[in-house]
Length: 542
Picture 1 (cartoon, rainbow, N blue to C red):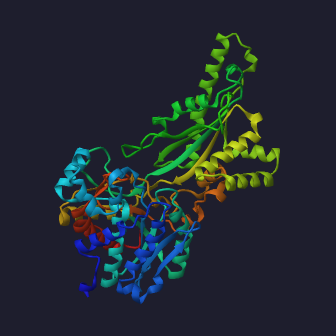
Picture 2 (picture 1 turned 45 degrees about the vertical axis):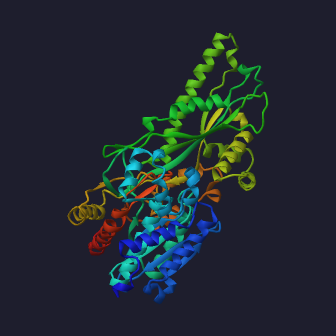
């Protein structure tokens, strides 16, 4: 029977990985649509799925892509490990003249041997060691998917007394459509097959904590990400009369100075501080050149989360924006004074949540009018989902411009809630056993850390917060759940601890993305099998 297993040896797993990497599954591409079909084809070669073909399914997403699930189900098991991965990859423009080899790891790695002068020192050293293969998707994260496929195969041959559910999704690199849309299906599958989800396993690659970090990590949580936005609404005027107006681009710049790298917007957990916030987008809302000063400007910020949620962040942003507004008012007052201007024209700058602006607009018009306005703007706006939120909040502010000058705080997609399962007894027991096993059986020193710092779909593996805390996100998202929906209620039904144990890789999203082959195919499979077996034996008290 062992001879029939085709994803167990290092060479077999590497061959499967190279096959899947060859599919150019860049987010929103034709290759992304094809990828799960090819993966399904590979999995159907396993005898268990030939006998239980109904346990492999492709689930269509609302935008024409698909999610693949494959369930190994033991007749006596209820406990179920959900193995999460994503198969989309980022684009390959950074490969330059080697772009045609980005999805061919062996040829790309060989070609790099003739171009070592253009590589960073650490990438050159890894290349020359012979232990690394380069290519888009090798580490992020098709290797993790192959590991999960191998676990399914081995479990079915050896009749492991636990259920394993493979879930591989599109769109992790953009808006996580795949993971957000599979959640209701996971609820249905739990009911249909009498499954209890007891652990979510992701196998995203290890990320270094600092440059030149050689420590091997696994993660008992995943860092969160949220994107607060600010529409600054000033006052229009001709450039020849600047004191008669208030330049929104200037307003945005003052606000950005208060947000950028602001340690007060960071968190520290167990001595580790989250990366500081940074500006992702800033522009005025004028559609063409004119000599009118820009009186509407928008900014989007990247903010990483550990313990905080959307409600916490909105309050913190209001405090920062209020401080910025006070600085703006002081600056304007000083300039009026220096220029002997009528100070009665001075206006206080309001700081409003989008929720407050929308409620004011409803009072001014009606619920039905505002709903239709939001939907019409979303339907007519070209560009991505962030642009839709910007256009909605801008038009809402124009409808209520008597409230200006103002700073309107809102959220733009995506939102990845933070998860930390480290304090849970089950995860502590698994972590201690993994560290001991890796040292004794694999010669590797693994270290558990609280948060996977690359952002992952584990953010949606259950709801690790109070459901009421999520409302603050929905009500401050222009367009609301019709535009961008996270199934918080369904997530709450299938909450379980999370862990991320994956391959050793470097330079995700870069042209030097690469995978350490010996660790990936000689040590990691043993570590992951040990993890599953430990969880299988864990008492139900967890």
